[in-house]
Length: 448
Image (tube, rainbow, N blue to C red):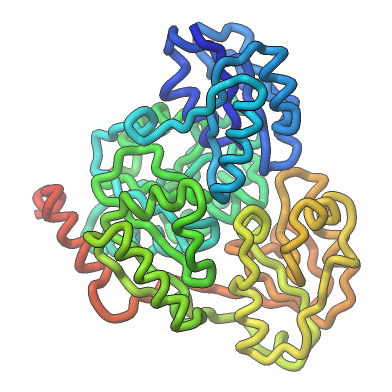
């Protein structure tokens, strides 16, 4: 029996354990390590989820202690289990693991993807912040137009009580409060529920798919709404991968974004309305090089705001989605586009005004720049976000997050939200490809 350490970030790591290790007598998982997400180390993967081979659960430690853990736990293998990281980072971890004496493992789709009884469409990406969410919403809308009931399942974000979060169902705004969602969770779930869609998430994705397939409101199709640039937890019948020309070449240098690109049936080139033509052309060439058989759909993310006058001629603070700015490394979000498009006089740098956990975020991710990440993984971060917004000396605030932050924090300055949806350009279109998918799955027969 080999002793294993799973290197993760409260998502893919738990899924890899559940699907590959939980009942596997050839391995004993002696620890998880945690990274990317603040304050998730020092916990345990609970016995109630870990199964009969782990009656005491599995401890979670900080990734910085990895070498020490390998020696103390006499680990034979370390399993890399999180996403949206450059290849240099993956191999740096491999070097640390090998230097400490252990082997380094990457688990693939055949060992970790669950097969659903329903047709599955997976929406994945090459990087965090490419536009998966608006692509998922567009796919759901077009399938609903064909009379189909679509249930979405989101990549995990279990940052609280893992047992209570085993299976989560979100159908109303009240469900967000019931499950004590962080800002990061609300940003992903709320856009679905306000449109009348049901979305599931949690920890145990076999239990989740069992519940989703039998959802009380009905289910014809499962829509996997991927997180970071991870590959799907479910075996897809159609894989849509979203790519971002603002970060061209990342699709060939980030893990596992290139996996998604190579496996894709459809590649959506998003944000073409705000990207440089030479970057779009380079992205096309990269797609053609590694996946020439993929259908490529051109797309844009046109923006609109509640009130242009809040921006025009004003000194503005721009708030964007937290994970997109941090490990997603995105510097041009919807808020910045809105500030430039609608004539802001100045984008105020919030870094000198940041306090507490927000100040730490800028230290950990120094390349964020003149943007404020809407970090809210816990109450302390939300309080620090509130204080930072209060401190910034500006005329107005542009909210570029997928949810209205006014529900979470009190913004004491004039503010306006930015909205964006996927807009297809020319042909082929998602509608055409989805009609072909519906026919291939015989889904139209149940609607006759």
